[in-house]
Length: 264
Image (cartoon, rainbow, N blue to C red; front, side):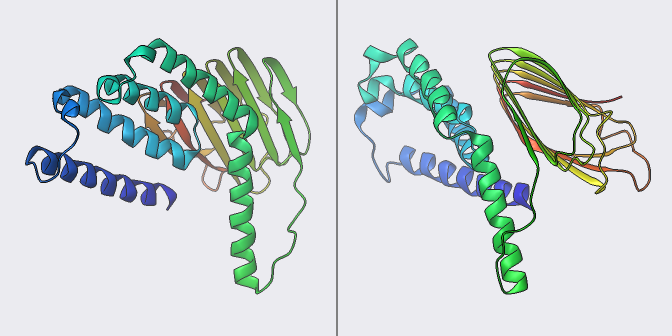
């Protein structure tokens, strides 16, 4: 449902941009004269950047917000009168803003907060009241290197930034895994994870990096990852798992990076 809504909003945005370009060229409305020198290929890139920014805002992906904004600034530097700071200063600022926002308002925290709030609202609306909900065990890791976890955590979070690491997830009660790779490489192995609830959600975020997910062969994989200027190689969804086996939903975003989903 979430991806369907995103696709509908994206289609509306593209229609609005298309109509705006046509009306602009027909002189129905005018932009400053300096914008008239913008080439068609620059306009096409600008439209792509706007779509990426739109998706990244929905996915709370700071890399996909600030770097496309920097590219837009480079494209329109002359009309905006900012040629003195393009391209390198703008790109460096985009990098610094990405790191700063990830430190101040971590994207995984925001996603988890809104998801929890939405779940509580839905439950409260359904039951006629709102309670505190069940206690959830959480494990957070934000470092580089190799690690092996064996516990009863329902929620697992791993983040790699400007480095590389391998994570062996062996939770005995796994429900959600939140994985992030920014300017780095992360490999996550799920062969020894236990999912007594029968369903697990893996949220991925890849930005200027690479992520490799190694999924048990008996799991049934449903890939819902959104890709913007990146690549997702899925060798797992096409391989059927066991009948009645674990349902594994993989979502998230890939921006200027690679995600590989592999069954083992």
